[in-house]
Length: 395
Image 1 (cartoon, rainbow, N blue to C red):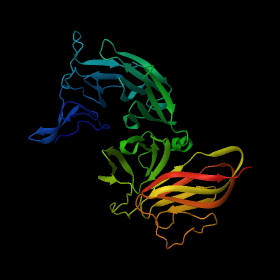
Image 2 (tube, one colour):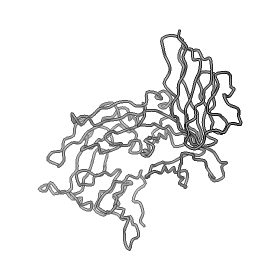
Image 3 (cartoon, helix red, strand yellow):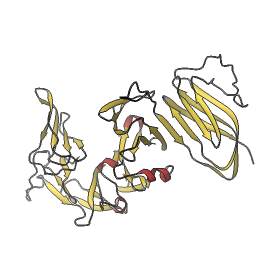
Image 4 (cartoon, helix red, strand yellow):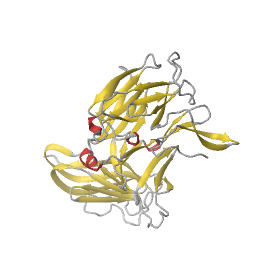
């Protein structure tokens, strides 16, 4: 029970001992209590909180909110209801001005290790911003230092923290900040070199970044009217794409589940996900596209054969493309091994195919010659790539 107090993007942070969360959405701060009155969850307004809480976080036993273009306010220690500052009491509510009157707005605040990372940039130029770092555990120890120049992010929606790394979307693509524990320093880097030329053309100010922990994936919604999701596997450093039949508005990982919000409905996405229905739409599978590193050798490369080892549910698989050569590998139509001659099978079609968790290997002879060769895979349904390789002629 309870209503939101504003119409800004909602952020929440864990608080208390019983699963409570503080919630900010542009107005007064809210407290979500999962137990509530008589066991009924409730959402109530924290009356003494600032009037325009745009983001919320927790640091050193205090609730913090962004309450102005330059201002961060903190509650009293251990008390999310107390927001009055007493100059004689360091444990009372506090506030900080970040880059006061610098012509920029705070767009996101993210806890990283023991610090806060604060993004500020001009309203129309996220790539002309400054990233600040708040260190120290109490007001008399706080220090605000610049961590990076000429970079920034669009909003709190375009930032995610994973362990000691912060990933954020910029007009130039996906970047990251890492906490270097040995030196107490911050290291920045770009993680989208493989797709930057295509990704950056699609990014808009409404872009969002979603974390799916069970998959070790970051999903990028480049613009609000886009069915295509860019997916970064931060465990392996590779990119894929998911094409949805309708526009997703949000996705999140919960335990071992992946939830996708489409319209006013929530869907549970499985590895072998096929829609039973999507309200007036025909059933459609999610497609994944993988583009691998370009083969460059300083001379023309001649590929004589290709193979893909994969795990797939029945009726699922994909197509490997190199140059003008396409090799399909679908579990319900392919025998485990191709012969190195045209498209004949090493066994007859009547031979039973491996099912369940068996690893299948599709092989085929080909002739692909070029100065630069970029392998691509487009897959559908429950598909997992085990390995891929090529036989390259000696020149």
